[in-house]
Structures are given as C-alpha cells and as structure tokens.
Image (cartoon, rainbow, N blue to C red):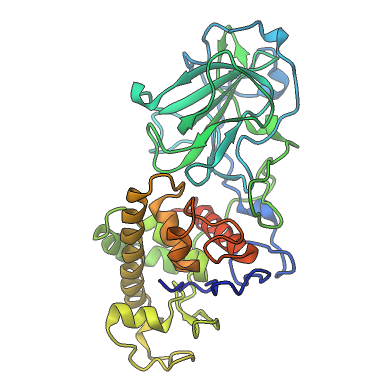
Length: 416
C-alpha cells in the first residue's frame, strides 16, 4: 500500500534524505530546533510531604507509603557486597516520559509510584545500575504490574521494571548497568506498551517509592537503532509541559470519538496524536511529495482520497486541491482519514496476528503504513525495518522511528 503522510517515504529513494515538517523534532541539517525539554511530560502536581530517611535519602526526597512485597523480599546477597556503578536510563533513546512520580489521575488507584516511558513493544529494558535480581513475577500471577522484575543495588535501593512482555533474568542473577532484563510490553494494568520504572530506597525498614528522576540526572541514554538528532532528554524537567493541543483538536474530539468508535482498536487519542504529528492540526496544510502532494489534517494523498470516497472530485493530479475541495473541511477530512487509518489498522492487525514474532503493535504498524507504506511492515522481520531491509534505507528507517515517536509524544496531551 502506498504511503500517504506528508513524510511519506519513496521506496529506495530516501536513504540519505531528511524529513521536513514533523512538529517538535529536529533532524541533522533540518529546521530550527525546539528546546527538547519542552517535549517532556509535566512535572507531577501535589508532591507528598513525607521525606525519605533511608540510606539514600539525599536523593530519595518525598516518598509514597506504598510497599511492594517483591521489593522487600529477602536479599539473595548482602547489599553491601553488590558492586556500585553508574546509572543509565532503563530504556533506549528516545526516552519519552508519559507519566511522572506522584501524578494523580484515573489510571492509578492512588498516586503514580514511578516514571513511565512510552516505547514500542519488544524494546529492550535494561538495568539502571549494577545489582542482583531480587524477584521476577509473571503476568499469569495476576499482579497489576503484569510481568515485572525487581533488582537490589549496593545502597539498599531497589529498582522495579513493570508491564514487561517478557523477562530474561532470574532471581539471584547479577546484572550490570545497561544489561537487558526483558522487553517492553503491556501486561497487567496497562493501557499500552510502556515501561513503568520505580526507585525504592529503604525507608523505615521497607523499600518505598521515590521520584526516580534525581537518580537519572546525568545518566546515559542507551542507543538502540537509528536515532533522531538530538534525543529529547526529559530528565530533569526544567521547562513547561508540552504546548496544549490546538483549539481545533478539542473542537473535533466528539467527531473523532464517534468515528473511532466504529473501529475497534483505534483510540481517539491515537488519531488525535497522529493528526498532530502530521499537520499540527492545520486543516489547510499542504506538502509536495513524490506521490503528488499531501493535503489537510492527516496529509492524505489524492489516491487515498479516491480509494475511500470513490472520486477525487475537483482535486487535479499532482497539484493542490482547490479551496472549496472537501479535503480542507475538518469533519469530512477526518471521516475519510479515520476510514483510511482504520483500514490500515485492520490489515496490520491481521498480519501481526499471523506473525507474532514481529515486535510492533497494530497501531504503530498502521502508522508505518501511513508514513512509509505497509510493505515496510509486511516485508521486515520485526515489523519496523532496519536499513536495507524492505527496500528501506537509513533515511527511511529514521523517518519511521521519528514518526512513531512523535505520535507517542502527543499522546501525553489528551483532547476533550
């Protein structure tokens, strides 16, 4: 299927090309860069007043009185015998935060006990600092964390890695900083693939959660595959949260909710974020590309419009549609665009069900369809190609990773 987004990749022709127009992202040689920290999620409101008194209280700060049995398990070795070492992020770049410590909201029974990073299913999850595996739980046990791992460190701090798709370690195993513990998943009480990460120093004889971000200030971010330049480092957060979605996004939320209700597996929030990634919710956005141009909120091509509507109307080949063409009308555009995205989603869900080894979600696969063509998913081993695979060069692969990441960034600002 032909790619349709404004960043659509021409097969085999963009190995060294750069994508323009993806909001909030900077590519080498690209447009003026925004402050990467402006992409981060907002700081948690209403920090609790308790303060840590354990062995690492200088970094511990306020804590939540929410013990975890797997963090308080009997240590396999005395903590003082564990080698100390540097800290690193538990997920590879780009380390995109979607929830912070002590946040409140409907997703949690109480305040949030850690930091969440959005990442595609199957992304490696790594030990944040050297330690010994304290406990490994499987999702079949029914714990809200699903499959998760706890690791004990030199200073009696325990780190927690939750909602994993699978775990690659066992209790008592020594791990180094950056060593893989498992992969990102969505097991347990989870709304989508992400890593829930906790830091729990010993406080009053128990390991209680504190803000992980001070532990990661200055920590390395592991690289994993083609990366954007620069990586948005969200820790620590020094600036305001993401800019609010445009008014049009809020105005069209009821329309999107109605349209996506007819497409199982397509949340309105995802489509909202995809529009933001494509056009920043500018209904008259137009981009000239190798497919003859892309128009409107979802940057659709003339060919896609015809496939859904049965006619291109007054849209001339290879040129911008006239001002009175319905592609520029937000409600009509979203109706056509949602049908197209849903069609891609259904096709990719069926393909991934037959190829469970591919480490990509149906939503992310549908995004690949939109920006680079469904063949990049169906003809690659993991669902997202590596350079040279599925007729996708280095520029093509970078575009795909950047596009998916950009959608995830905008998921942190819900409409409505």
